[in-house]
Length: 406
Image 1: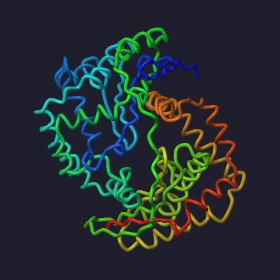
Image 2: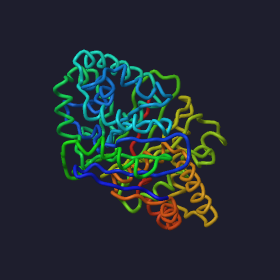
Image 3: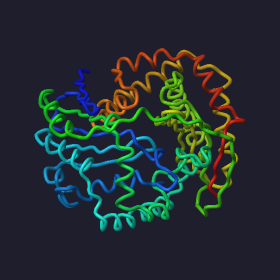
Image 4: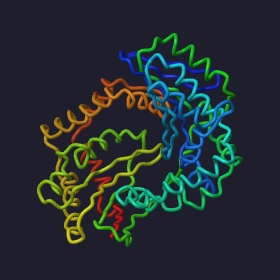
């Protein structure tokens, strides 16, 4: 994989991977997420993501939405707890159109007051719709449980009360404080010559005013295991249980990814899917998730089941955790697990939008990009002893928290 890398004098970085194809992808990743909000700003990063599409110094909302849609492209954005992304997919001949609109909405948004007030109602409806989906809501509630009264535990959307308090000035103040040029990466994938990429990158990003900050200050997270049951009047019981886990730069992270995939990853042959769904018919949706952040991480198991199967389902899940804590994987099992996750990785690289965002995040977080071959070597280097040690660390029963919706 041959990459074009460049850093502007204001600190904004570029990574471009030239690949064949008619469609190209690009985006701007910003190292700012919901964890960077104060208590009074809860939900503001997500609100700003919406407002980027509502007007700039030279465009109204309709013209922003139409800029790529008119040529069959798509402009989008997302917010996580640690990053904000504005990205696009389009025909390669419309590359400059995409770069220009991303730059314009990121750095020239005006946050019209009428649009701010209108969008408050939209986001409050989004919050309400989320409350109607317990299978998604429970993940946010679980992180609020294990990171109680800490910024990373708060959900991304905010609350109706916090959203109502936002103003044009408060949005501008947040951006001024948190959108730092040395914490931005412009990432690109497509059949575009390097000289054109570099010319357009300089044209639309080099004039951005320098604003620098050091990497995000690491926090000392306080975690106390807890077990909570909430009355939600749902048809199914929903259960999530888990623990804090390794952060993004922990050397044990690769082993944790392997363990999570073995236990309840996307494959239908995961241990939890086989035991809870295929063999016993206790659940339809079952999964485990490992989310690493810059200074902590979260591991969780989720399933939905009928009320009379809840305790049995918890028992089966705990048995699967115990197996991984007490018995090393055999060499055949380990190789199968490694080959499976390498296959998922290769498929992800063939998804060019996913590849574009992955390249950008790697440069943003690690200031480097591993090739797929290097990542596969790291996977191959994981040993059964490392997996057993990680399982005994993260899956320790006394350290697990549980949240149940009934």
